[in-house]
Structure formats: structure tokens, C-alpha cells
Length: 156
Image (cartoon, rainbow, N blue to C red; front, top):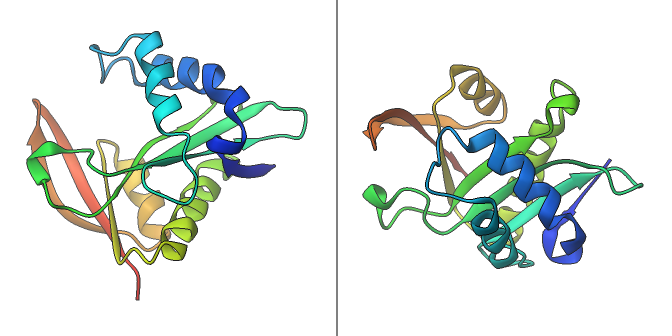
């Protein structure tokens, strides 16, 4: 498995957009597939925020993705960058791909001299995953009618 910047692997944009759209559709009714493709094109940066990483096998089979964005929750303006849209293809879950994507995003943020990064989740399983990687729960908030758990990782 390789994890690389989407900027160097733009061929993956349609596949990522379809997978993320299908997976997050329940949470993002306002997004159409075309909108997701346009968003990924804007996230195809390298070594600057925002950026997206893609995990794939050598034969170009997309396994998953994660993004780092400037602002993922407008009610928390002024916060550090956000880890967002972690997605692993259903056929490849429970293999450590999500953890590897998060670790790589954290490594890239360290290279950019970021001091802190945030994320939110609605899933207790993911909270446990992030805690294993050193993240801490900051608060729980109701955002757009959904309870969200906000977490942060601070570089030491």
C-alpha cells in the first residue's frame, strides 16, 4: 500500500468522490457527486493546507483517503486545521488503512510546523481509534442537530 498526495494522483479523484459521496451521503445531503469531484480538485494540493492523501495499491486500486482542511466546523472559527473525510473502502476496512492515513496526515502536518490539529466524529469506535493515535477529546457539541465529538492532537 502507498499513501501519497492526491495532487500527484489526480486520476483517483472520481473514485474518491464516489466512495466518499456514497459513504457520507447520510451526513451531507446538500452535496451532489459533481460537487464532491469539484471539492477534491480543490483539495489536490501538496505540502499546504488544504490537502488530501490517498491510499492505493500499485495497480491503482483506491483503498481510502483523508483530507486536512482549514475550517471544518464554522462554529469553531479560529481553530487549527482539521482532519476531515477519513474514508476507507468497505472491502478494505479493519486492515489498518484508516490508522495509516491518519498517521500520514499527522506526519505531513508536523512537517508544516502545525502545533495542533482538530477533528470531529459522531462514532465512538472512531474515538477509540483516534485515542490510540494520541488524540484527546476536547468537547462534545450539537452541530446541525447531530452530536459531535471534537478531538485534538497537539504536537509536542
